[in-house]
Image 1: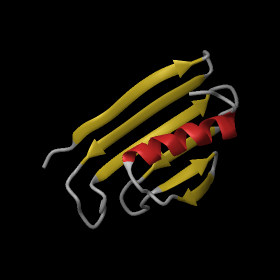
Image 2: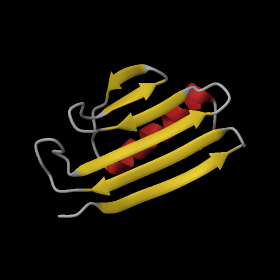
Image 3: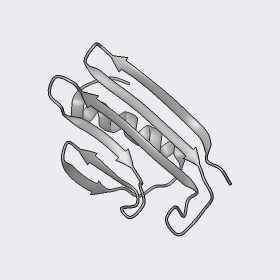
Image 4: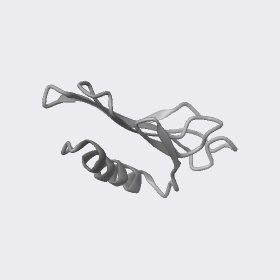
Length: 96
């Protein structure tokens, strides 16, 4: 099965932030048991602070607030995006 794009959005916000969200449906496997591969990031170009949520192979679902990594309990795509939309304003004070 080829990866099927579920969500892709890239934008520059307030002339200061870069936002990129990618979600793909993929074949379920040991590496991706939920059948989803994702990367959600928002970067403050002025301060280099960031919020990043991803689940790349070997590390599983996790998120970063700047350079600190936290384990993330993935539930579904809707919750993932909602959690990202909550973390970004809390950490970077930017509204999505």
